[in-house]
Length: 207
Image (cartoon, rainbow, N blue to C red):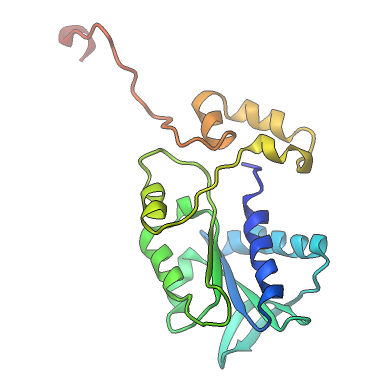
């Protein structure tokens, strides 16, 4: 939490917007409301930081299809659209040059596969950027990312300290002590529901 995940994936797509003029991307969160309230807001803020002009359009015709919630970059004629896992079926038939999937731990594997299968437009490098909080070491994302040859980077809240409000980390430390802190502040894939082992187990007493 607070490690800069959304900022990183947004900056990655904005970089490609400039590198590949005329390209088309989407950023998708777990739900459409989260995508609008969080991901889209971050996208605009990163554009301001990077000095890149962007125009929001409620609807826009791209590749002869109507797209909703579009961020258009007039200097590069590239676009980034906002999507979500809960309406991922709606991208069937469309083609994209890259995508950033946010909060992947709240997604279903089928929705991730559906999203990435649409990266076939051919005007950029088909980048795939995925972010999410650390989960239990047995969670599906870890094996899936390895099987699909993703490079995995682990960051922690403390690495992003200069960009956070002064009280952010102390508040997080109070909210997430112990193994919760190891997961959400340090980014470690640890279980927070382990049952402790009883070294002198006796069935009649402990069962």
